[in-house]
Length: 292
Image 1 (cartoon, rainbow, N blue to C red):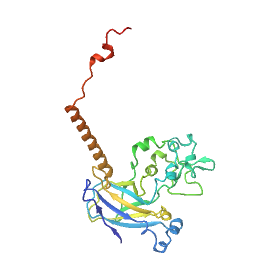
Image 2 (cartoon, rainbow, N blue to C red):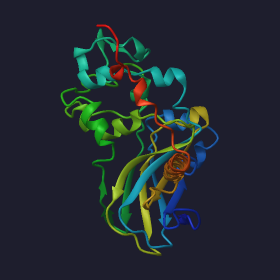
Image 3 (cartoon, rainbow, N blue to C red):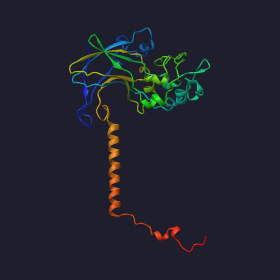
Image 4 (tube, one colour):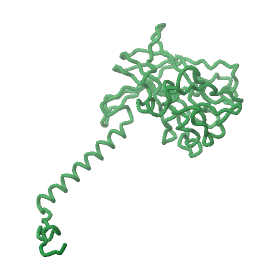
């Protein structure tokens, strides 16, 4: 039984953020296929089930956020970022132009909904968590931004012909659920700026105690082997600054503090050397003797 040990942040602005990080893309390949991982991932007859064991060595307070992390994955590539139709995501077939989605733009004469390479490559690994024989409930709701759910993905747009072509990419979408409720898709469509990124998968809403061992059953479906990518499972708590990566929080505080400091400097300069008022006798409507 393999155990992956807790990594925790003990310095900086977020000392209480705890993380478990497990890279599983290599270990979840059967030993006989490790010299040819691409053959393994492309062969649908080979089971993709994998079990991992994670040891918690510090108490983790709920909610515990579950992320999948991808490395060496360039979601910021120009052609990849452009391969989508925001209007179609919101209005469906009422907006038929999908030229920007090429090559995943149409199938059998109809626009693919949702079209484009971003949606087509949707992450499709899955995770189930267990305490011994007991399943640990994972909340998959409200993992996407509320603004995206309400204003960028249509409540009456259904993926009726998604992944129906000859070239199948990542995850399938339930054609009976509107895009506004397909939160895995919404999270994935917010593309990352850097080649190493993690995206929210769900939340564990109960505490994990020190020395507990979690079993994680993984379906290792997603093909990162063709481009040398890496996959990791991340469990993380959060602090008032957010998660383990507190760069954004520190940046906001630093920039806001600098603006306050600059404002105070200008206020002191104004108090010490106030701007002189103009001579009101030179205002045009006080002039006399101007002929009308």
